[in-house]
Length: 143
Ligand code: CMP
View 1 (tube, helix red, strand yellow):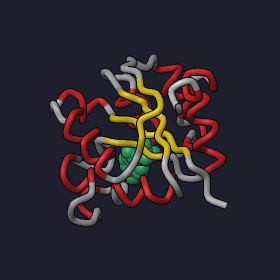
View 2 (cartoon, helix red, strand yellow):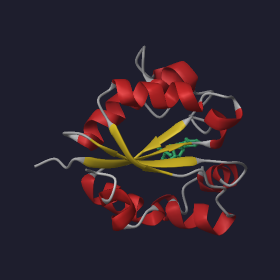
View 3 (cartoon, helix red, strand yellow):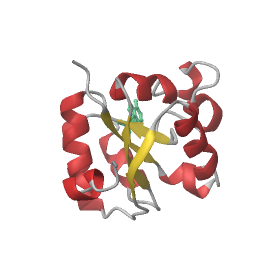
């Protein structure tokens, strides 16, 4: 059964461009409850670790440099079928290919600077939530 949690990140372009509030409004309108959130500035090593699965791919260096270039807002989300619903809410990786009304279509600049991240599986959602938040931080707010 599909899980109820996923991890999203408002990336540095979303925050620097002043879109944080609008992006979170879209997330809430899609029926998600924000269970944990924190403004962070990732070190290069933290960005490398978070995107370890992409190490060796042609865009990895650019991705790590960008994600450590400014503030990010990781957030843990909850609703039914969280991973698939959030990916539908944010749209395709490349905003040029994203459907109208999706967060990336509305707010992203390019495939690299694409405003938001969303976990791609329940397994990765659990790993990624654990990367930023303790279980207590997520669960304590779930009442
Ligand atoms: P994200 O959902 O954060 O997961 C991995 C990221 O790698 C992805 O969003 C994009 O921002 C980035 N990415 C994927 N493919 C490319 C690409 N071809 N060029 C640049 N960045 C990419």
